[in-house]
Length: 481
Image 1 (cartoon, rainbow, N blue to C red):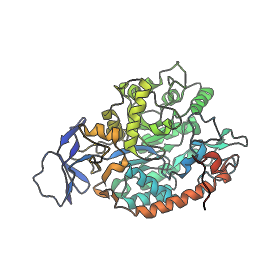
Image 2: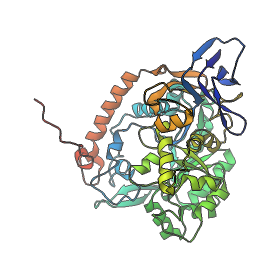
Image 3: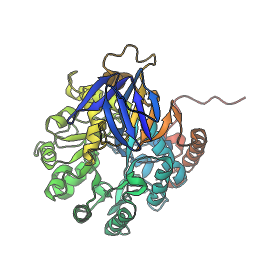
């Protein structure tokens, strides 16, 4: 079937960069774009009127953990002050011997909602970092029509809290090399499923939970099987100090020296390089090592802004030639809002309004993500690219007068302004309404799953704290009549 999107601003691609077409057109047939320009004289089976809207490539969310937002109620843990940028400990790390932190949640609801929230936030390509119940996730991806990179995580050590609330790294002999082999087998069985919308990657969990031997084995497996790698690295101060203490190297220096970093590697966060203001380690130029390697960075600014941290800085990474993509990591999975925060945090870091430009963060959310995946058919609207398209309504009051639609999107927009989402030629959202699933039913299940998550917190927390201890209500709850 041939579909014509007509009118509005179109973000076309000229072979090297985006360009704007006023009152442009996009034509796609089945799952492939066949024409982008100012006019189309052929016949179309279906027409979408985009006057007053922005027609843009689907965004690439390069770092998130599929689930609901319920565990993130613990993110700003008021019982602890020693996370040093590692606040995921609060909602994902149990005490030694306890069940996993999210044991009370429904995995099927978590995964479906995580995918749908990311789609609602403008992402047509999603990287789930270390998939839980990965085989079931493949089925869910097929049903909802998403484009997802996935695969099970593996590691040498597991995070646990001891009885005094101190973070520990326990040996995890059941994972490690065996986990890597399971991931390779999984990729062999599922890579390319659902007409290529499922792609597999290797996901060693976090740098400080992987032995040097496991990292080297992962590098070898990626080369042998043609798989890309995503790894959390340089993500918090605890990790950086552990690497310096055990190896005498910064996180990035260590990865460089063991030959892990190449252009098929995507590093999650990569905030704590040697010259970051929290690191104060002037003995190595981490960012130059990173730039020379060709590896990419998945930048998730909101996650760090919530704990008073920022990348230092997006502009510096860009100037060195480091490919920076965007991800959301935690909720909301709104990549449009994430673009705005990425630009603002860059300006804070540099003390300049001439950085963090709208085009820079838009490039990161589109072309940067596609480059990180080695894809020249995503993140752009041009003939031959995949029909992954997002249409944003610019006619709302908060947009006002629109001169530059990209600036308007980044400065004023959010996922709630999205009118249409098309993935691989299939419409998932139309007229702001969910087409691919029953959103009302899903949200009811999400609330129920969240209630179970919050009720179970005392079963796995190191000190038995309740949800009200960890995340007290903003204001007292008045008694009901």
